[in-house]
Image (tube, rainbow, N blue to C red; front, top):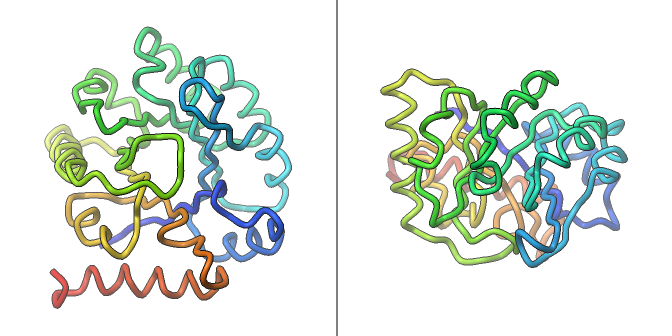
Length: 228
């Protein structure tokens, strides 16, 4: 089973930014940048200036997750900063979804949409064929380290069914509580991209290199027949 790892840079040790970015560039498949405006979610996180600062130091695709009330106003800024893809919450683009998606694609970037735990898959079915990625939040957005919401496994499986039935190519991504307790259920349901944060990769009890080894071993163990 193929899967991709997208480290959440919000969770990295900013005092070791260059060192950790160098390591991730040799291991990960893409980088996940959370942007929060303090309104859509009651928290603040990374910015376009952060993307611009890391862009020269990584060859990986940079995926920007816009947890903001007016994402259309941020698209051009993040594209100029070096974002390769932008993931927007379904609720924030509901009135202009097609225009926003086409704006991103016309700029040569990849559009994605994020589903909050209480947001149904049906919210994006009319434009699902236009997306490169759909992200399922398995925690409520805004804060790292929240408990996993098990009902989201069924949502992932629903997306996989739609993808197969309609022969679509979008990636199914999971954001929130990706760790040894959830790998098996997520991947078996159809998850293809795992966003790795504080519970699975950026752990306070071990260096990043060691945590990466633990993470990959735990994912491998979750996918072996003995653990199925």
